[in-house]
Length: 237
Image 1 (cartoon, rainbow, N blue to C red):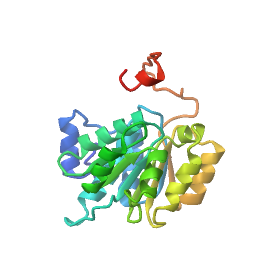
Image 2 (tube, one colour):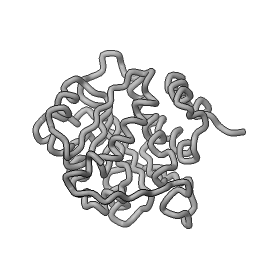
Image 3 (cartoon, rainbow, N blue to C red):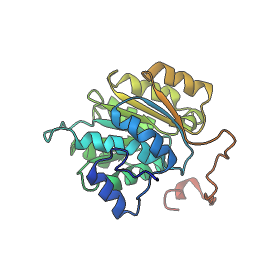
Image 4 (tube, rainbow, N blue to C red):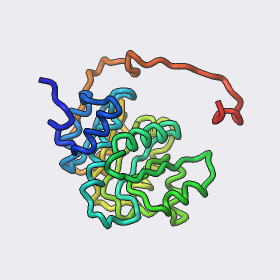
């Protein structure tokens, strides 16, 4: 019998929000990771883009927010670190869809955009911040982002952050967070530097993998399109 999100212990409000969005059955990585994430354990999850990993870590973040006291602090309790602004937008949108009925406050911060709107969003109080390493460090250095009360941290697409040279920045972000946090690391592959990062910063993580080693990097249904553009025209395109 196919499991549902309710079978995995997901809060009713989140289940209803997912159903409204047409999401009724969990993907394999979600079935494996959700019980662990909801219990508060650290996770290493291997999953390619397009296999549903955002909800695998996003639902535990949302549920922990929903279970927090009504007078929860203004500083964020959860942080998702991603390698690109495009992924930041996608992750934040998925969190907003799943958390629509629970009132979770999600802010997105990344480079290439003005600081002021992002600073205003953080000042307006936020539960979950999704951002790229450089902008996160800038805002933390300017004291606009307080990570001292963080309860959950997600490193998404860790291997891509390695490829883009972000691992030193990720290390600096981790140093700003409390050691008692829950950490969830997701990566399509596990190169040596990512393994070492996990060993240094995760506490007895459970490793889940919903795929075989011979799977292609891209999900079969993925279609890629490339548009050549001048550097100044990229955002508009």
